[in-house]
Image 1 (cartoon, rainbow, N blue to C red):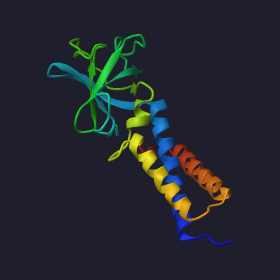
Image 2 (cartoon, one colour):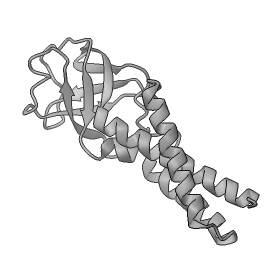
Image 3 (cartoon, rainbow, N blue to C red):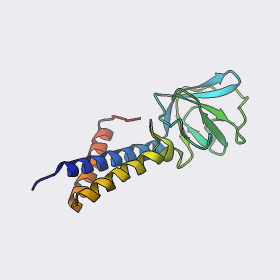
Amino acid sequence: FQLSWATVILVSDLTILMLFLFWVISRQIKGINIDDVRMEGDGVVVTTCGRHWVSDLHWPPHVEVTLHDTGHPRLDKPEEQLRARCLLGGYRFELLGKDGERLEERADASRGTIRPAFPFLILWSGRPLPAVLFIPFMLLISFAIDAQVHVRKRHLVVSAILAFGIAFLLRVCGITLG
C-alpha cells in the first residue's frame, strides 16, 4: 500500500474542511459566550469572551439574535425580537430592536450566550474567509486534486473518521476553537 503526495494533500484538505464544518456547526448550536452586556454611548453593546469570529464580509448587516442565561429579564425573553450588528474589532455586537433601531433601555449582564439566527454563524464564521467562501474553496481544491489522482473511497472514509476523531478529542479535552 503506497500513498502519493496528492492523496495525502487531498485527505488533509478534506480533514481540515470537516473540522471547520464541525467547528462552525457547533458554534451555531452552542452560541457565543458573553463576557459583558452594558450601555456604551447611545446603545447596548455585548462583548464576547474572546473573538466571535464573524467575518467582516458578513451579510446582512443586522441579524436576529436570542440571548440565553444572562440573568437580565428582558434579554432572556425568547419572544423578545432582538437584532445585532457586529462592531469592528471582532469582540463586540451592538444590540438593536426588532426594526434595527438602537435599544434605549439600560441592560447590564456579565454572563450567558448570544445565538444569531440559523444559519448566520454557519455561513459567516471564519477569518479571513467566511465559511460561505472557505468551504467551496476547499472543495474546489479537493476536486482539482481528485481529478489528478484517483482516490479510493476508503481514503475519504479514513479522513472523515480522522476529522471526527480529532473533533471528539478536542471536545472531550475541553479545547474550543472559537
